[in-house]
Amino acid sequence: MARLLSLNVGMPKDVPWQGRTVHTGIFKHPVEGARMARRLNVDGDGQGDIGGHGGEQRAVMVYQRQSYDYWRQELGRDDLEYGNFGENFTVDGLLDDEVHIGDRYRIGDAEFEVSQPRVTCFRVALRLNEPEMPALLVARRRPGFYFRVIKEGEVRAGDEITRVAVGRHEMNVADIDALLYLPERDVVRLRKAVDIPALSPGWRASFQDLLSPKEEPAAAGWPGFRPLRVTRIVSESSTIASIHLSTPDGSTLPTPLPGQFLTLKAADQVRSYSLSAASSAEYRISVKRDGVVSTFLHTRLNVGDTLDAAAPRGDFTLQDNNSPVVLLSAGVGVTPVLAMLRALAGSKREVWWLHTTRSAAEHAFRDEAHDLLAGLESHEHIYHTFEGNRLNGAALAQLSLPANASAYMCGPSGFMDDMTAALRGLGITDVHSELFGALPAINPGIVGETPTTPHQPLGPVGPGPRITFARSGLTVPWRSDFDNLLELAEACDVPTRWACRTGVCHTCVTPLLSGEIRYQPDPLELPAAGSALVCCARPTEDVVLDL
Image (cartoon, rainbow, N blue to C red; front, top):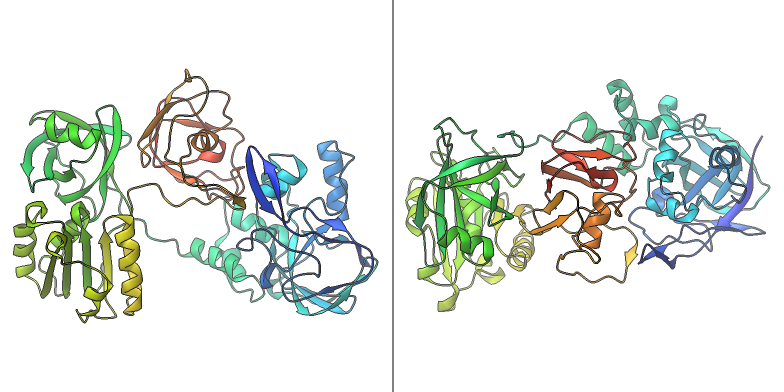
């Protein structure tokens, strides 16, 4: 008979970790007597990151005595006590390779249902001071699992555990965990997994994505960087110039999707610029003069010069459907939506062209856009802020935009935030935007930090390969005192995304524009070609990352 050996609870608290502060509820301790197991939690328990832990689908965390015995021997530790793995219920029995998703159990006065395996998370590594623990839990098929509460009631250590129902398809916790995190997935098992009604919505959605992967923009590319020759330089306004590029030998260029961008090396730095026009013969980027690199392109670049460019990339692309199209832009943000407008030539889709800039003198591509719109069922609205005309929510509300439209926008982040809110307020929910700066960070549990402009790391200059964070406009020599590229990025205050920090969850996957890396430790599943898991990657040569 399975039995509840220890009932463990703990409230979230701030703890120091690697010079930062983490708000976490991973610290659980045994309690005596009965506690109510409620729909969202056990009385006296809490989670620091409710986005990844707790809630109805993850109300109670379960781990087994048998796994404690395994880890004591495997890790050579005699200090592991019940609750150390962050579990609420330490149980005798209910092994991960025996318990099925959807199994129901009666414990004390309550009834529970198995909803999903443990979420891979760095905080179990923090708690145990074992950096590779998240990966080991998956690799050794000992993740533990969550209960949802079917019937609230009191539970206490010593209660017997009785199975009262078996989950559909009888897929056990260890197999479900491996199906998400390990390679060589079986499609038949994936289809069974999404057919388990008790599996949490998040995990079912992940499996559905694996069955129907998102179509990535067509690869229009070459590896690393290659030289492109400047064929023309054209002034488009008082602040914007277009640079036309082709191959030095006249060979054909791959045709990018409308909305994609080029990443260039110029003035010993790396920058990305949207393609405002492209064909198999020539690319056109359009650059506003507002910094060191753009000033170099405006004043030092000449026809006949070459620029090293990575292949066109980006998922801000025009979708092929029949819905009306709203193209919004501010200033030089016109460039990717202009490429979309060119792609709509001959289309029967209704097009709304909304552009704002400071003045007529700074209005780039006015005639080109107007001529393209003349051949479409279109609505053109231009706003010059110097004259008091602003593209804002009130202006949008006057236009009678169709609610079934697809909107594409590019401009400063504040402009895009305002436009997104205004569009959704008008009932337009299919909204796409381009962001050239650093992506918003995903640092679960980290608190008390304020955004800082990326900078060189403290300490001596490293002797190693040059690491370029393309979105952040920063190049840093590698130092061997960093364990991985993620740690270097954090030392530079480059915004990062991560969760497990051991190569399991792939939250940290980052486009690798050029260079080679090696892994230490090896991830459980390699990312797609042209990508790197920065949480466990080290450079072997100069590297350019889309961070």
